[in-house]
Length: 466
Image 1 (cartoon, one colour):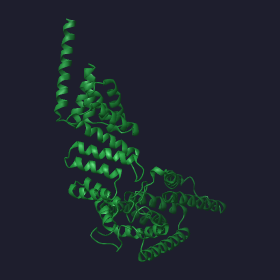
Image 2 (spheres, helix red, strand yellow):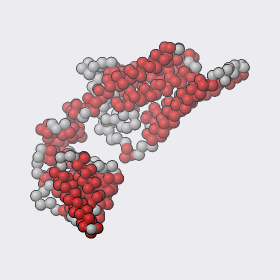
Image 3 (spheres, helix red, strand yellow):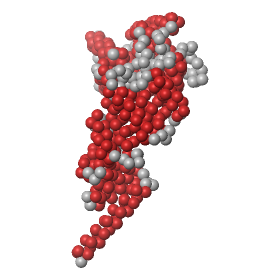
Image 4 (spheres, helix red, strand yellow):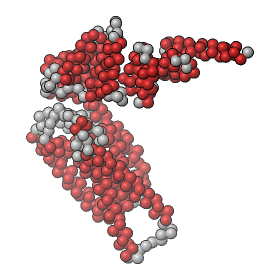
């Protein structure tokens, strides 16, 4: 709902500007100031395009996004490891406004405020005082700026100012705040920070542009957009530093010994290939709470360290068993589908692969998530190995329709066409496979074989004609 309110803000400003503009036009008509309409036709059309069409387009798009944000299903909500009171959220959001503005102009090495980026047990009394002061200042400044804009600006200047703000606001803060997605659950300056920003910046930019006239406005319109990418990059760098995962979850795990934090830290370390520390964090999480996600991460760790596929399979079976049992949170449908897919891949790496078992696991994965193109590809290749070419062709083509375009997929399609003696199609697929992976020996051998078959076919047809 916070996102919905923020996204509706430009629509409300547009409606306010439109009503004021119409009231001003009626007043001018009553006073007989109809103007030189013929002379100003071009400027009127440009003004209509800029202040009416573009602004209403942005406002309608914002309303659409607001509707989507307000109608999020329960599956789209992000579960937070930290639950704060609404008042604490408002206070930390108000402070976050100034934190983001400070980070725009300071290097990462400078510590902006003595606030820790993780707030686990609610805000302290000192932080609440700072948040209350920040919230009061934002409300006071916003109210004063709205009054100034209303008194000093014409309708057209308010429209251009607000439109300029809204576009620049998205460019500047969308990458950092993830306005159309959910942010990290324990990131301090997150989620609610765009609410006070949306209250503060529109009237500020509108007032600044309303005060400019003539060439100064043109200079500002040309210079300020060039400044936004620089500020956006500076503001985003701090977020990216935390969103890398290791710092964020490492800090959280140090502050509070929660298994969820150790699990997330282990997954982040695993992604950064810091395997010894990842093992330590995941083992600590598993010792505190045995859940399906940690078992799945342990399977990935075993595979990354070059362990036996059998041991990874044991962890994945344990993950599925824990997911089916009541108690800790299990696996989502997509996570369970990925688990079955990983089990099929590990089964294929065994010394004696069980092909029916592999096909069954891929089929279970696709029943949970039919749009997994990678699983469709692997399932199709396994069907081709089993000699079920008709089913394999349908499955591989389905993977292709889902956007999969790999050398293995085209090589598999080529092998099926080759088995069906459709040499031209097979050659096209093998050539595409080599384009994607030029040094692949298997595809080169397959292409050479199909070319020889086509040459023999042409020679036979030539002899038949003679």
